[in-house]
Structures are given as structure tokens and as C-alpha cells.
Length: 333
Image 1 (cartoon, one colour):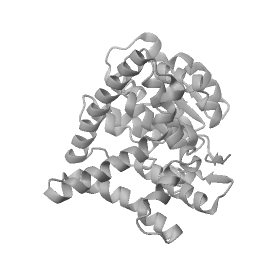
Image 2 (image 1 turned 90 degrees about the horizontal axis):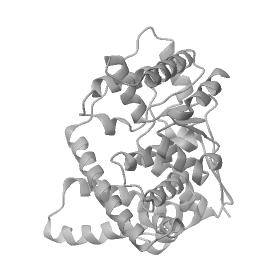
Image 3 (image 1 turned 30 degrees about the vertical axis):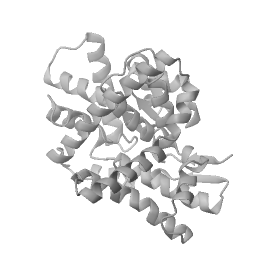
Image 4 (image 1 turned 180 degrees about the vertical axis):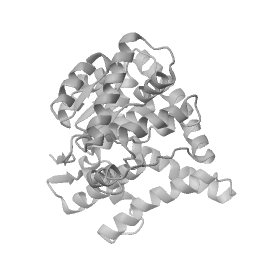
């Protein structure tokens, strides 16, 4: 069995869910929230910002902007995340996915028994050194805002995912499909979607009816073939590459395994899928292996701990209902 070792940064690292950023913005704007939430959020903001400014804690922002950009309070939410992160950002989800995949591909070709995933693959530069550099400055500037085209593509994808996942959940519940059965299907989702896209793209290429985003997707898939060719010397090797994408070397990657586990849980649950669930899965599949502490909503925290994902990747997961335990951990830093 392949052993995957996901290393964490030398500095304690906290990842904060988008829902917390929204509530912090509401608190800052003086909007009505419960008294207990107000006290907890104020303490969280004070504790985290003090530790980050002292270079004792990292609280990087990920792809959360895709959830709030263009929505009400987006300026305020961005400002709150900037205060927590001090401008430290993780790479986009696709960049991290590919970084893990290429390392796994090399390990698969060499038949390595262990795969090492350094924490630095989540960032464009060393975040600890970058935080120290930013902190040494008297002022730092954080910018936000997504290109309308990219935001539109993201919103369309999110709506499609919500509809697809909820339809699938209802069918699974009606059929009595188990979590384990769905988990096996989720593991194959990447290679299945890759094959479906290849067939569709080939058909559309003849007619010339290809959307602009499909060219980006084609280039993304083509990069896997180029890397496979570099490692093996084989061109257009569908059989070999497909063997990798259906092997433990791919399935055991944290960004793949966690996504498969959480999606399988969501679409076999009796509870309806919520609008932010698919984005939460993307965020958490990156954050859990990288961060020492994760603060998310109660339902998702319960799913993670129930599946043992937090223990598997040595990460402490909290929600607002257990935030006092997070405060106790932060006080030790």
C-alpha cells in the first residue's frame, strides 16, 4: 500500500471558512448577529490578527473569493480575510491538484512505496518568509476582484454542481446506495470526466462549435499527457495514463481522496445539498492536509470528524460550536 506523507509548514497554520469571513464582515458593518456569535468572532479576529502580525501563525486565504466576489458585502469580506491573512494566499485549487498529481505520476512510474508532498506546493513562494517580509513593512495592500468572465464561469459551474449533486443524492437515497459504493464511484470521477470530455471535444472539433472554456480544459488535460510523455517516453498513451488515474498513486492524493470522501458523504446523505457545499469540498480538500487547524461550519466539521479525515491528515477541525477549543489551541502558540 502506498504511503502518502503530507508535510505541514513550520509555522502553525489556520484555515478559515468563507462563512466565517461573511460573519466577520457583518460584525464590522454593525449588522445584526447573535450576541454569542459577536463575542466569539471578535475574540477570533483579535487572537488571529495578533498572532499573524507577530509571525507566530499563518492564516492564508484560498479560493474563498469565488464564493463572495460580486455578492453583497464582498468588499467587507475581502477586507476581513486580508486582516487575517496579511496577504498570504494559497495557489488556486487546480494548481495544487496538478502539483500533487505530477508528483504522484512520477512516483507511479518509479513504483515508489512512499510519496512525499511538501507544504510549499500550496504556495507560489515560501509563506513563512513572505509573512515576515510583509510584517516588516509599515503598510501592505491587498486587492480583490475576479475577471467577469472567470466569475461567470465559476457561478455557472457552481449552479450546475448544486443541481447535479442534489439530483444524484435523491436518486442514491431512493436506491439505498451506500457511502462505500458511492466512494468507489467518486474515485473514478476524474478519469470518467476526462474520457467524456475527450469524446465531446473531438466531436465538437469537427463542427467548430467549441466554447472558449473548453479550450482551457483541453490544455489542462493535455498537460497530463505531456508530463506522462516526459516521464515514460510514450505519446498519447491513454492506457498508461488511465492506469495511473485509476491507481492508488492518484486515489490516495489528499486533494483527490478527501474530495471523494466528502462528495460520497454528501450525495448519500438524507439532508439536501446546500449551495456552498461543493465549494467547501474543494476548499477543505486543500486546507486539511496543509493546515494544523481548520475552522468550518458545524455540518461539514461533523462529516470530516465522522469520516476520520482530520485524524488521517493530522489536522484539528473546529466549528463555531467548538471554537473555544480552537481558542485554547491558539493560546498555546
